[in-house]
Image (cartoon, rainbow, N blue to C red; front, side):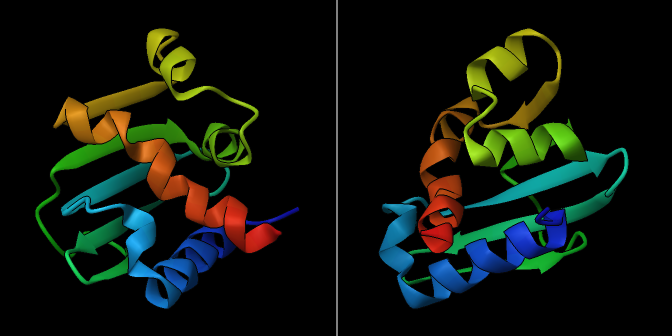
Length: 114
């Protein structure tokens, strides 16, 4: 099974390969993961570049707090982001508009798997 770290590494490589995957989003997403694979990751999106870093390196525009196993389900498409938020599995602080575009960012991972 893919680890959280591997998921973020795949997102990182996809964003570096093709920054247009972020579809014009300029933001810093922070993921505060709890549970089995707890950690903090940031997805940093710029107009012409995207990357993933471990730890809190920049001020985030949108912070998502979720259990690491639920995060995996989210990126695999097994858990709907809206349902996760409504059921309390996903907590969002910051720009809700960015949170709504999260699926576009995470789709870089699904593309990498194919």
